Length: 467
Image (cartoon, rainbow, N blue to C red; front, side, top):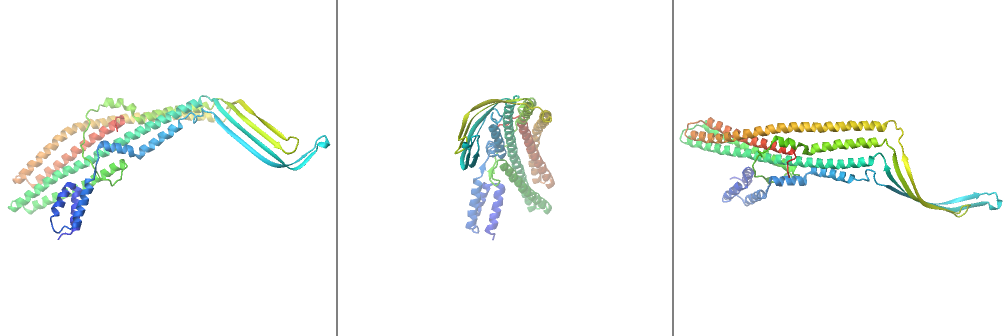
């Protein structure tokens, strides 16, 4: 008698590979047998419940979840926030600087004062004195070679650059999620092809058994049919592993738990309307290229900031001071002064070992490097667009032919199977037709995925991917 544990193991495997509906039928059929224990029935119910609560995921859902949960996007947003906070006229040095100080000192002093008039000599010990002072100073930069204005412009460009980098990260995340999503569909289509071939193998096995029963087939055909069937079962199991792993990769991109249960029911539909000229015209909108252009302007502002250090600086200074000194003895018992101050300060850099001049030359070299980096991006992206578009158009042409091949391969399998049943074809002929059908199915799926991947990449580079 088969134990309940073995029955559960078989049910679990079947449910894993064929889905919860088939499992329900298995559980119902087994529940009529007396050797199924109550625990087995409960376990079937738990299996069915776990599959019934699997979340159906659409492409829009996947993209929205990824944009919401992406840690990379959160880091890019933090960079935007930092640059937004830093983009302030005070950071550039365009606001007054105000500072205040205050001191209060108490001390005991020994006084010994002698004057021309001997009667006025003062000699005391432990005299208490108090020194109180305070002042407020303000300084406002009037001119420093336009360095403040240039620095503020550079800070603004840094903010714009971080926004472009955020847009680039968003485009990359969308492209990665879409590619991973369609990869799951590709893997699932693989297993559908295997399932169809399994049906053929089962029919082939049934035909051999029937022929053997009437003496028209030998054990060699039976063994070969059984081996072919078992091999497809193993392929089915391996492909299910590939599906599970592709789903895990998708969950990683969505920043969800890797053991979450999701189902995807979708097809790969390729956009046939992409035009090379339009994509190349949209290349200037690519956020990576725009960020590179921002870097050129940032370096140009650094050149101006560095050059401004060689100009004189003019500052307006003002303040208010208060001084109070008191003593219990001595010639001066009280000294109290207070009042405002105002003035202008000029700083002229005369010589510092040519440091500023060399810094300016380095900044100019950095401008040239930024321009070269931008040109490299344009060169590489343009070449990538052309190569991807070539693959895109070629794959679309191959798809039309491969669809016809796939239909022909299905018809061929049906024809050979009929001839095999009539003993007009060998079991090798059937297996060869099956292999042709499987290869045609795999090729059709791969071409569809390749065309879709090229479409996604072309839209990413031209900033046409939308969340």
